[in-house]
Length: 633
Ligand SMILES: [Zn+2]
Image (cartoon, rainbow, N blue to C red; front, top):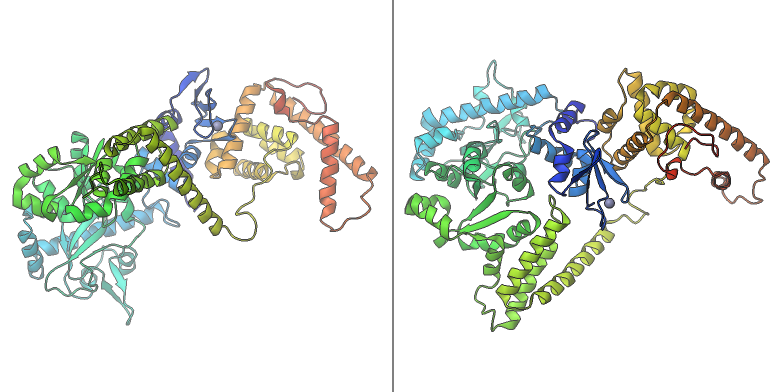
């Protein structure tokens, strides 16, 4: 996906997110000179090793050799890929990129798709309101108790049963058939030329993003109407605008209510959500036929402090107990469950018992996710007497706790604290000593880890390692040269002219070097910030931050003089190497032609150690130039 994300987009996100704020949310930071410092989350840190540089908008742990910008931080912290980190940060920054990360979609094309979607939504909506064919749908909605206001507010629609009704509406100024196909509205017929309506014969629930732009449809069958597919509900397929795991139905209309009440009600059906709004619960949303997932939580946390999952009756509660507990364990999250009585869904409950009864249930019957899972697991068990069944239930719960993904947005301390509270509660509920629960959890956790490792081993391809990492250390001279390039981009073309490209050998260094040269040639300034935008690989980002920080620490007054000095060093060394090669006798036997290279490297390495060509950074902070052992320090 690299390359399809525009630099402007990355730049906008970086401008919107302050790294001190981002890191500070996870790790307590305090100011130390020009930096902020905190305990590193990736090693067992006792004194603050993690440095955050507000001016450079970078972070670095020298112990772990990890560093980079906001994207790298999220990648490392959450264990996600670059596009995922981009998405998370865009979400936090409130920058829409639903289609921006889709390969090959320009801003204009995306706009066209939004327009086409809005056009189709309008066609279906008017059809539901006015057309004779839609009578069956209007009757259904009236039976379900949905008011005309709700139908307008949620812009419900109807797709007539004719094979390609929407095509008959296409005219000048409307989107064309291929565009509607791209949006999943039209499906190409497999029997002949042409298309048919995916949603034909269905009541349509337009699905909008949180900004209120229609991006997809949910379609429900109606009694006695012929459809293309038998399923009761179908949703739009994944399209450049629509990804169902990242969308919540009704969020555009609920977000003010959520902000006001700091609470969100998550329901399972579209009509549940609409009726909740109609009855005054304007903080209700619905999932799109999927379980509540990480992506949903991430979106909802922007507005809600407390999430209440409203489940239809007991069966759903049992089905979802484990997944809900897992989310609860992994997120610093106030996650509550309301199971409706008598197997009613929210829509039926509200219609039969009224909004006051629903509000009362919310007040009195919601339990948090742990309590919910405990109740499900221990149903019909006397935990004080039925030792065997109780220990199995406890075991089951600990298994969920142990398998829950590591918390993404919190620090080790927060995680420990939450785990402690959880274990205390389990100990109380099962009436066993807390230490016992704790010990058992670490055993279960080890077992879970072993299983995961074995699974990973099985997945690994038979031929060697999954990916090879180049040697971590750069040659001192190439490192110094690269540092100069990063700190003083105006030297770039001079360096390219005066040094042969072999001066840069390490693959990562080469990437930075060639990118700088390319940018300079294109008339851009390849400075630190510009280079960070070019790379998505954590290793390269880390190296860039290292070079930048080293350069800053050296406080170089005269980069041109340092460059001259490096040049002298380089050519002196090149001469020495040539002499060495001429004088060295090759070993008597070279089993493979490739080994000559290896042997030469060894000779050079030996010589470098003998001449004391150690890393210039190991000598600590210094400034200016000194004639030392062959390299400026
Ligand atoms: Zn560290």
